[in-house]
Image (cartoon, rainbow, N blue to C red; front, side, top):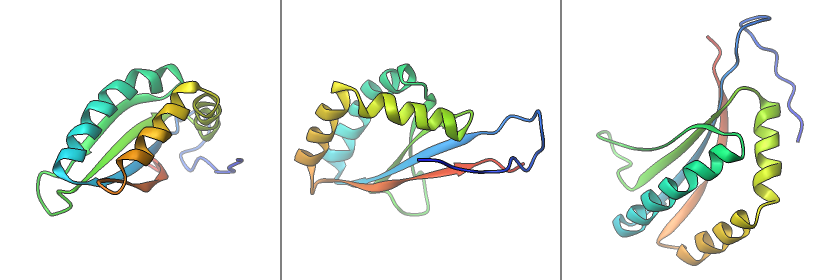
Length: 117
């Protein structure tokens, strides 16, 4: 996967890329997601991710959803992370566990965002 993004802040300014995976589930399934995310965080850091966190709504709805977020210095760093993760035995085990948790836990997709200020 190749991305061409112009850093709108100019040369020398750091770009922040955040991958946000949205999960939806039952209260019990979301408890399992918390435990799984705690276990996954150091693994993701080993693959090159920074600042792993699992966010839940405190108000405003979507109480049945969580968002797992990890940061990268560039799209290239995100690509290296994906390569490392996809080549790992951990990824195979994780995808099997996620599949077995369905429909109580649903992966709603991952989106990439980048800081423009």
